[in-house]
Image 1: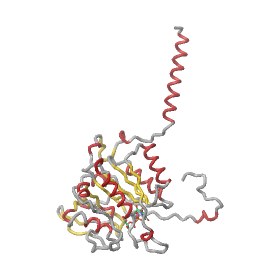
Image 2 (image 1 turned 180 degrees about the horizontal axis):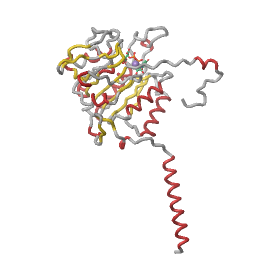
Image 3 (image 1 turned 135 degrees about the vertical axis):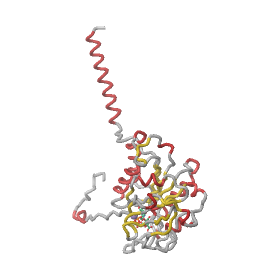
Image 4 (image 1 turned 30 degrees about the horizontal axis):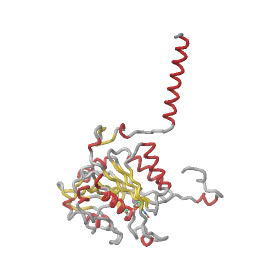
Length: 307
Ligand code: UGA
Ligand code: MN
């Protein structure tokens, strides 16, 4: 073969391969691939994360202006946690476009596949009316129960050594929290920041047992713990097939009523986060945005915009 023909042929081949590689990569933007990610785990990077018990994180969520931002922030935290299965439950009669799109994006672009999207609407009678105080009815009840129902329906395929955690969509979570709850025998507990009128609401630990709670709000509750402050083992959940949340209990007794179905006393609670001396979750609240400028517009600022 003539050398010129060989060189031209080789260059054409190289160009062709480059074009093919470009086309393959540009068709799907991959920001990260979980199997290769360096997960945070007790401050070390982890290789064999497949062997860790799965954490089933249940998040009730409802439509409002900040919803997409809240869920985006949350997803970025959960992406950094190995073996986490995120169960998002919308307070809606159907799956909404906003949440479905986000879930699709997480699955397609970020390779975050362990997501289950469910929905269950809060009955009208338990919805806050204009002017009602925010504590009048408990929130997220039907949604958390829907997730528990899903877990029970799918037990066969789930990790029986796993853990269940109820993570509201507006709180802030330190990655270390997930390492702390990963090995829960029955119920593990830890402090929660910025809740109940305190900087830190927490169990007070004496030796390895819980002596008391420092809560100021509803201190007579059998378990004065916020939803963000405990996780339960799948084993305990399986052995209590009727346990769920109820909207008809005394105001503020949502967590106590749920935990009361699973354990008898504080002796069954396992203190985590250095004997409950570290805050790894904050009960943050996002302000409703002031949108008074919108009223002056003929077309909403979001028209023709993906927002
Ligand atoms: C506190 C606790 O931290 C919650 O776990 C508890 O459910 C709530 O009180 C209660 O009163 O029942 P708070 O910040 O007042 O939390 O409640 P939100 O964050 O507004 O709501 C808790 C969860 O329920 C959130 O994930 C939120 O998205 C969801 N939610 C709220 C709904 O699904 N539907 C609603 O109408 C309102
Ligand atoms: Mn909240």
